[in-house]
Image (cartoon, rainbow, N blue to C red; front, side):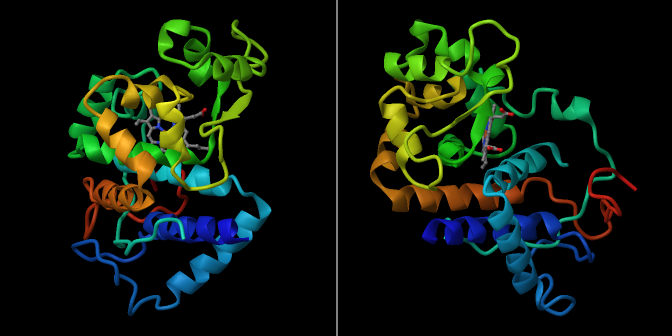
Length: 260
Ligand code: HEM
């Protein structure tokens, strides 16, 4: 029950961010709809509660969408969400796959560089990766990691993941596994604790704790929920500030999936 409440709060924040495209002002602000739509929070919260009751995975899907959308322009921790973001007049599958979003096979340097290119620090990157405390990934995204012992992976973890993800590509490609094997339904510290045990599912997860410059951050988040939430929220706010379209820039889409 408590968990459902947490997820709902998190999703409410995210939906509001993504839904904030109806009126044009010059800047993002948390009271953007104070006059034009004062019941916004109530309405969104109610609808999200319904959606989560129908499908719990919704939280993970929306959180991931926020990351992708911010990078390519397209009582969980809570924060004051800045509203007023408008939609892009372009949408390109090629751009979305053109090296902005890091792949799951990324090295640590690659992750650091891609986040830096968006104005985000290593600290932001490690804290935001903690979103992988919920949600799932498909076999195709972690196959290489679980079949290669030199990949800094704990053996029993690799074996357990191999059961539903065969070495050769084929029918198991889309089988999913939880990103946090310990408590996939909770927005907690266990993503980082699993990294300490070499049980990160994606290569891009485990590289955060593999003898490099971000090891100490992983250790500190594995010990302090406050530190993780504080930096996660900072990172989410910073991500929301990446090149927002406001004022007369961009548009308000009639159909969210494509430019007018
Ligand atoms: C650090 C670089 C990152 C990489 C390489 C990465 C990669 C991935 C991959 C490969 C998946 C599985 C996708 C699939 O199987 O279709 C995934 C899932 C997910 N990612 Fe990330 N991600 C990163 C950062 C983030 C960030 C910053 C967030 C949000 C703040 C995020 C939130 C999520 C969530 C919630 C899921 C689960 C989605 C679901 O269950 O539907 N990721 N990520």
